[in-house]
Length: 417
Image (cartoon, rainbow, N blue to C red; front, side, top):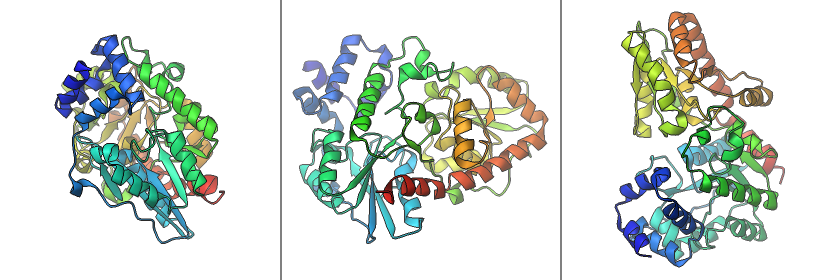
């Protein structure tokens, strides 16, 4: 108990850095951290909750108000890359009398994304007043979409999402699940998905990821409710799910001038998690091209979301991810900005995109082994570069503007229920 008290008293940033590098921690401490995370209402869980801080009465937000429509959809609580908010807006624009709202837990030090309701972590975790008021408010909706198999009401039901889902169904609400990534991606299975899997690295701590993914899949299997995945690769982990594409705000990213006009193209890499994105695998080849004067290479980290349009505006090529074998929000934003996007995307993902949308995914294929040659080839072929940029803009405008996502949610869940 003493070690938990000491950990809880550390500054939040120190705790976050420690948890991001679990492989450096002794095995007994990793087991203890996992136990606390899996038992939030236990004594150690309550002690660890102190690190989340306290809150004042005016920190407690008003409960989420349901829209005045016949069909009322509630989405929460993760809002990764503003997706909960953007899916809600896509449903607002969809045909029919549909309105949607999203709730997001506001994590200190995280990226700031818009949400209909933002709840500070201490309030979400410890305010019984907010938890009960939000449950009453959500009960006035008709449909609820759980993101990343996370609890909506903090510790009100011991963070038991299966119990939350059951209670909402008994109140007459239609429920569904949206899987985002590590919540359902099974590390042991991903090893066969791509040879570049980050889970193959010696010393990578995957124990909790493996257990969480298996537990979440068991929840989905037991609930037998409509299930969606935000990226096509996750269909391997949840074969009965439907792909609901991520959404980007096209106007925010639109850049009137396409790429390929600079004599020395600027190549940008902006990893959210450098180990997962494969930064260390691609940087040597990019540094070599930079030193030879072929490109100007910029590896950027820790940039707030608000500054990303400017980053892409000053780029020609954007290097996305090279280890997971798929693509997500960052790649779509770069394509919407008219930049050429390069990354490693496995055939299964490309085939799914083609089958579901009728369009080829315009991300230029490159692996850590080929990235140097692929970039050099694009620099020598400006017509190809401009064509790839134009294809990306058109693709995102057709697939990731929210219309496809709203249609999938409506047809596979909302109107079907």
